[in-house]
Length: 221
Image 1 (cartoon, rainbow, N blue to C red):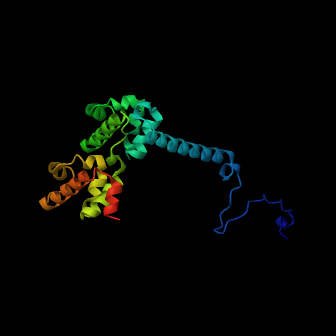
Image 2 (image 1 turned 90 degrees about the vertical axis):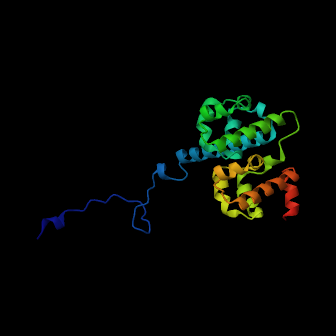
Protein backbone atom coordinates (compact mmCIF):
# COMPACT_ATOMS: atom_id res chain seq x y z
CA UNK A 1 0.00 0.00 0.00
CA UNK A 2 1.18 3.45 -0.82
CA UNK A 3 2.61 4.97 2.37
CA UNK A 4 1.60 8.40 1.25
CA UNK A 5 -1.98 7.49 2.03
CA UNK A 6 -1.00 7.18 5.71
CA UNK A 7 0.63 10.58 5.90
CA UNK A 8 -1.68 12.86 7.85
CA UNK A 9 -2.76 15.84 5.89
CA UNK A 10 -1.71 19.24 7.19
CA UNK A 11 -4.43 21.82 7.62
CA UNK A 12 -4.65 24.05 4.58
CA UNK A 13 -4.20 27.77 4.88
CA UNK A 14 -7.57 29.44 5.03
CA UNK A 15 -8.23 31.61 2.03
CA UNK A 16 -10.43 34.56 1.72
CA UNK A 17 -13.85 34.40 0.08
CA UNK A 18 -13.90 33.79 -3.64
CA UNK A 19 -15.62 36.13 -6.03
CA UNK A 20 -18.04 34.93 -8.67
CA UNK A 21 -15.29 34.95 -11.29
CA UNK A 22 -13.13 32.61 -9.24
CA UNK A 23 -10.60 35.18 -8.06
CA UNK A 24 -9.78 35.66 -4.44
CA UNK A 25 -11.18 38.73 -2.82
CA UNK A 26 -8.47 40.56 -0.96
CA UNK A 27 -9.25 41.52 2.59
CA UNK A 28 -6.17 43.60 3.27
CA UNK A 29 -6.63 47.06 4.75
CA UNK A 30 -4.73 48.65 1.90
CA UNK A 31 -7.41 47.58 -0.57
CA UNK A 32 -10.40 48.25 1.61
CA UNK A 33 -12.56 51.21 0.65
CA UNK A 34 -12.65 52.18 4.29
CA UNK A 35 -8.90 52.01 4.82
CA UNK A 36 -7.29 55.09 6.41
CA UNK A 37 -5.16 55.73 3.32
CA UNK A 38 -8.05 55.79 0.88
CA UNK A 39 -10.25 57.72 3.27
CA UNK A 40 -7.63 60.42 3.75
CA UNK A 41 -7.12 60.68 0.00
CA UNK A 42 -10.85 60.99 -0.52
CA UNK A 43 -11.12 63.70 2.11
CA UNK A 44 -8.15 65.51 0.62
CA UNK A 45 -9.74 65.47 -2.84
CA UNK A 46 -12.99 66.76 -1.39
CA UNK A 47 -11.24 69.56 0.47
CA UNK A 48 -9.35 70.57 -2.67
CA UNK A 49 -12.60 70.66 -4.62
CA UNK A 50 -14.33 72.70 -1.92
CA UNK A 51 -11.41 75.11 -1.78
CA UNK A 52 -11.50 75.52 -5.55
CA UNK A 53 -15.23 76.31 -5.47
CA UNK A 54 -14.63 78.86 -2.72
CA UNK A 55 -11.87 80.46 -4.77
CA UNK A 56 -14.18 80.65 -7.81
CA UNK A 57 -16.80 82.37 -5.67
CA UNK A 58 -14.17 84.88 -4.53
CA UNK A 59 -13.27 85.54 -8.16
CA UNK A 60 -16.92 86.25 -8.92
CA UNK A 61 -17.55 88.49 -5.92
CA UNK A 62 -14.37 90.47 -5.22
CA UNK A 63 -12.28 92.92 -7.28
CA UNK A 64 -9.35 91.36 -9.12
CA UNK A 65 -6.89 93.58 -7.25
CA UNK A 66 -7.77 91.71 -4.03
CA UNK A 67 -7.19 88.21 -5.40
CA UNK A 68 -4.49 85.93 -4.08
CA UNK A 69 -2.71 83.25 -6.09
CA UNK A 70 -5.34 80.57 -5.46
CA UNK A 71 -8.15 82.78 -6.70
CA UNK A 72 -6.18 83.70 -9.82
CA UNK A 73 -5.67 80.03 -10.64
CA UNK A 74 -9.33 79.14 -9.99
CA UNK A 75 -10.42 82.00 -12.24
CA UNK A 76 -8.10 80.85 -15.01
CA UNK A 77 -9.21 77.21 -14.76
CA UNK A 78 -12.95 77.48 -14.16
CA UNK A 79 -14.20 80.87 -15.32
CA UNK A 80 -11.83 81.33 -18.25
CA UNK A 81 -11.68 77.58 -19.06
CA UNK A 82 -7.91 77.73 -19.52
CA UNK A 83 -6.42 75.08 -17.23
CA UNK A 84 -3.55 74.54 -19.68
CA UNK A 85 -1.91 77.76 -18.43
CA UNK A 86 -2.22 77.13 -14.68
CA UNK A 87 1.32 75.82 -14.15
CA UNK A 88 2.97 78.87 -15.69
CA UNK A 89 0.48 81.11 -13.92
CA UNK A 90 1.28 79.60 -10.51
CA UNK A 91 4.97 80.28 -11.12
CA UNK A 92 4.65 83.83 -12.45
CA UNK A 93 1.39 85.37 -11.23
CA UNK A 94 1.07 85.51 -7.45
CA UNK A 95 -1.85 87.93 -7.12
CA UNK A 96 -4.65 89.73 -8.90
CA UNK A 97 -2.63 92.95 -8.87
CA UNK A 98 0.06 91.24 -10.93
CA UNK A 99 -2.61 89.87 -13.28
CA UNK A 100 -4.06 93.34 -13.81
CA UNK A 101 -0.67 94.61 -14.94
CA UNK A 102 0.08 91.91 -17.53
CA UNK A 103 0.71 92.99 -21.10
CA UNK A 104 0.18 90.98 -24.27
CA UNK A 105 3.90 90.20 -24.24
CA UNK A 106 3.70 89.04 -20.62
CA UNK A 107 0.87 86.67 -21.52
CA UNK A 108 2.92 85.14 -24.32
CA UNK A 109 6.31 84.94 -22.62
CA UNK A 110 5.32 84.63 -18.95
CA UNK A 111 2.28 82.38 -19.25
CA UNK A 112 3.18 80.65 -22.50
CA UNK A 113 -0.04 81.71 -24.25
CA UNK A 114 1.07 81.24 -27.85
CA UNK A 115 -2.44 81.41 -29.34
CA UNK A 116 -3.23 84.99 -30.31
CA UNK A 117 -6.94 84.32 -29.79
CA UNK A 118 -6.33 83.00 -26.28
CA UNK A 119 -4.20 86.06 -25.52
CA UNK A 120 -6.99 88.29 -26.77
CA UNK A 121 -9.50 86.47 -24.55
CA UNK A 122 -7.30 87.00 -21.49
CA UNK A 123 -6.41 90.58 -22.36
CA UNK A 124 -10.06 91.58 -22.89
CA UNK A 125 -11.05 89.91 -19.62
CA UNK A 126 -8.27 91.65 -17.70
CA UNK A 127 -9.28 95.01 -19.22
CA UNK A 128 -12.89 94.34 -18.19
CA UNK A 129 -11.84 93.59 -14.62
CA UNK A 130 -9.60 96.66 -14.61
CA UNK A 131 -12.55 98.85 -15.63
CA UNK A 132 -14.70 97.14 -12.99
CA UNK A 133 -12.27 98.24 -10.27
CA UNK A 134 -14.00 101.64 -10.42
CA UNK A 135 -17.16 100.07 -9.02
CA UNK A 136 -19.34 99.83 -12.12
CA UNK A 137 -19.03 96.05 -12.36
CA UNK A 138 -18.12 93.77 -15.24
CA UNK A 139 -19.59 94.17 -18.69
CA UNK A 140 -22.70 92.20 -19.65
CA UNK A 141 -20.54 90.33 -22.17
CA UNK A 142 -18.79 88.67 -19.21
CA UNK A 143 -21.94 86.57 -18.69
CA UNK A 144 -21.52 84.95 -22.12
CA UNK A 145 -19.02 82.12 -21.76
CA UNK A 146 -17.59 80.20 -24.70
CA UNK A 147 -20.02 77.30 -24.24
CA UNK A 148 -22.98 79.65 -24.65
CA UNK A 149 -21.45 81.34 -27.69
CA UNK A 150 -20.59 78.05 -29.41
CA UNK A 151 -23.97 76.44 -28.75
CA UNK A 152 -26.80 78.91 -28.15
CA UNK A 153 -25.62 81.98 -30.05
CA UNK A 154 -24.34 80.23 -33.18
CA UNK A 155 -27.55 78.21 -33.27
CA UNK A 156 -29.61 81.41 -33.12
CA UNK A 157 -27.55 82.94 -35.92
CA UNK A 158 -28.21 79.81 -37.96
CA UNK A 159 -24.58 78.72 -38.29
CA UNK A 160 -24.10 75.86 -35.81
CA UNK A 161 -21.57 74.22 -38.16
CA UNK A 162 -18.93 76.62 -36.80
CA UNK A 163 -19.52 75.59 -33.19
CA UNK A 164 -16.34 73.52 -32.93
CA UNK A 165 -14.12 76.29 -34.31
CA UNK A 166 -15.56 78.84 -31.86
CA UNK A 167 -15.25 76.31 -29.03
CA UNK A 168 -11.61 75.51 -29.85
CA UNK A 169 -10.68 79.19 -29.72
CA UNK A 170 -12.70 79.68 -26.50
CA UNK A 171 -14.63 82.57 -28.06
CA UNK A 172 -16.73 84.21 -25.34
CA UNK A 173 -18.89 87.33 -25.24
CA UNK A 174 -16.00 89.74 -24.89
CA UNK A 175 -14.25 88.18 -27.87
CA UNK A 176 -17.43 88.33 -29.97
CA UNK A 177 -17.43 92.06 -29.33
CA UNK A 178 -13.95 92.29 -30.89
CA UNK A 179 -14.29 90.02 -33.94
CA UNK A 180 -13.76 91.43 -37.42
CA UNK A 181 -14.33 89.88 -40.83
CA UNK A 182 -10.60 89.25 -41.05
CA UNK A 183 -10.70 87.39 -37.71
CA UNK A 184 -13.54 85.19 -38.94
CA UNK A 185 -11.58 84.17 -41.98
CA UNK A 186 -8.08 83.98 -40.52
CA UNK A 187 -8.73 82.30 -37.18
CA UNK A 188 -12.12 80.61 -37.51
CA UNK A 189 -11.78 79.51 -41.15
CA UNK A 190 -15.07 81.11 -42.18
CA UNK A 191 -14.47 82.02 -45.81
CA UNK A 192 -18.04 82.32 -47.14
CA UNK A 193 -18.91 86.02 -47.33
CA UNK A 194 -22.60 85.44 -46.62
CA UNK A 195 -21.70 83.56 -43.43
CA UNK A 196 -19.32 86.32 -42.36
CA UNK A 197 -22.07 88.88 -42.88
CA UNK A 198 -24.57 86.81 -40.87
CA UNK A 199 -22.15 86.52 -37.96
CA UNK A 200 -21.25 90.21 -37.98
CA UNK A 201 -24.95 91.16 -38.09
CA UNK A 202 -25.53 88.83 -35.14
CA UNK A 203 -22.75 90.60 -33.24
CA UNK A 204 -24.24 93.97 -34.19
CA UNK A 205 -27.56 92.85 -32.69
CA UNK A 206 -25.77 91.97 -29.46
CA UNK A 207 -24.29 95.48 -29.51
CA UNK A 208 -27.80 96.91 -29.77
CA UNK A 209 -28.78 94.83 -26.73
CA UNK A 210 -25.63 95.95 -24.86
CA UNK A 211 -24.61 92.28 -24.79
CA UNK A 212 -27.33 91.65 -22.21
CA UNK A 213 -28.07 87.93 -22.34
CA UNK A 214 -31.30 88.32 -20.37
CA UNK A 215 -32.74 90.79 -22.89
CA UNK A 216 -31.76 88.42 -25.67
CA UNK A 217 -33.58 85.57 -23.92
CA UNK A 218 -36.82 87.56 -24.04
CA UNK A 219 -36.40 87.69 -27.82
CA UNK A 220 -35.43 83.99 -28.10
CA UNK A 221 -37.29 82.17 -25.30
